[in-house]
Length: 399
Ligand SMILES: [Zn+2]
Image (cartoon, rainbow, N blue to C red; front, side, top):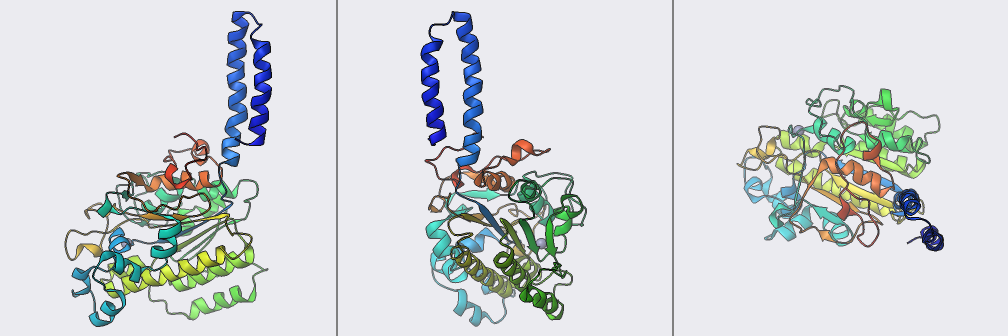
């Protein structure tokens, strides 16, 4: 209990003796008044003090499966037509047990995240994480994560401005967060997903330049370099460039909320290139390591920042070809995962509880980590926060 609460309870005790001498009817009235008074005093304190997180960094790996996160490289696929240079891939990512294989594929996830954070969605242990939307592709997936609302109207990948408010739009309007929320994305649809015309959010996506008169030389150089880099995904920017922009922005501008949206895991899966799907996941794990090491080395962020890593949808797994695709007609592509690390999160590692979490719960989870109630102020349905992400011995908001 905080000092302010203790003081309130002390004065409430003194008031109570006076209260005993009142007539019964007045006692009832005073009792009701007292309950309202106590509620008014305590509720804002729960919101204000129930967190150490001051900053949030979110990273998504588009369409990256829980199967590879938890089991590492799949031998059925590394031995199939989907993997060329098989010996090379075996050398890099093959080992006898899933525990060894996943460590080879994503060493940061299976060291720092597994030791000091939480990993949800290991279905082999009975812990399930999934999207609540029925479509199982990107725009509905990102809409669900960031608005908390699996809206049936959001049913295509066309860059239609999102009718729903995101947690980022909400935070950007809170005191201390103004112009401190930024998005760097590979996929060019993100300005529509965050409805930049309405929200005014800073969203740098696809091969657009970072525009700011105060931009440092590195950001100016990245603007120049991204047009010379290979554009092998059309208008979708290569993740390497997205990461470099995001990292430099974090160092120079010190945002309180940063979102990096990577894309290549999905592109490589659709292309049927398992080698590059694994290689890209491995590369993004290295970006995450570097990012977290920077966060924990900078006094602005150290021990005050929560990192959330997730994906927008799963992929199929029922036959040898199913991994390439996802969507309403692809069985099991609703199955996803997420990972979290930060000053409010218990060091549970892999979550083994027989529970199910949904991505529609992540928006309110982000809000609660920062001490806000997005659900209470959004003009649409929002999933409840995932309470196990917060340390249990502190008071948590009710569902
Ligand atoms: Zn896809």
